[in-house]
Length: 249
Ligand code: PGA
Image 1 (cartoon, helix red, strand yellow):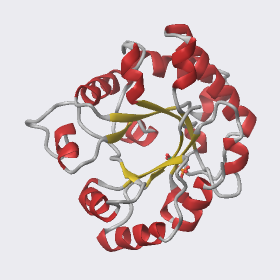
Image 2 (cartoon, helix red, strand yellow):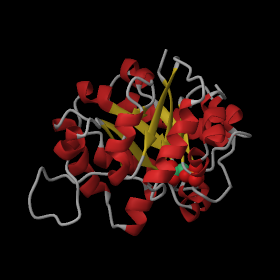
Image 3 (cartoon, helix red, strand yellow):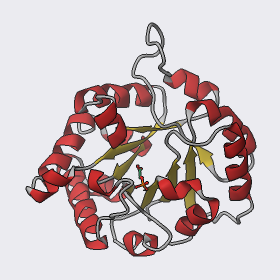
């Protein structure tokens, strides 16, 4: 049985006061023990969130990190800085990082290697743009994103990897992949892992879906056999909506 995971990607939202309020609201909910729940605040709110969530099952992850361990990288954050504030999970490869900040499959490979070397868990995001789906190139594109950043890894590294398939056309648009489209892609991803590694490993890797998951569509999307949960943007900013999604399994 694979872990079921729901992670809230807060993006560039929530000041200190807003973080306090959202975390208080989340903590008012009974958190199920059979679903792993993460929130990913901005760097400046990580320590606050870790302190506030101490003793709760909700884990704190970061939204990005630099591949270098230290040095002349103005404005960047390293794995040791994250670990220093007790954050051991990081999102890498989000489509906004790829499209707005020039991250590529090659640079993500370096980040993946660096995060793994530091012993971090990775939520690795990937997915096609609308034109790529319209041109029926989405499977090839996803295969390329996975193989160039992840398929050089040894078997054992995969215990630290959570995949998040996020079709770019569904992120923040209110348009979701249909449950069939999500399941079809997740099954394809598992096949790719099986082809490069083993069936046993493919069976174990957690694959999240992301892109306009809301309380009213989560249950249907999560019902796919190969869909193990979600990476939630907009709906993670409201505690009731986020917890409704956690409870949609
Ligand atoms: P969304 O964002 O839920 O607002 O579409 C998902 C994401 O960017 O991870």
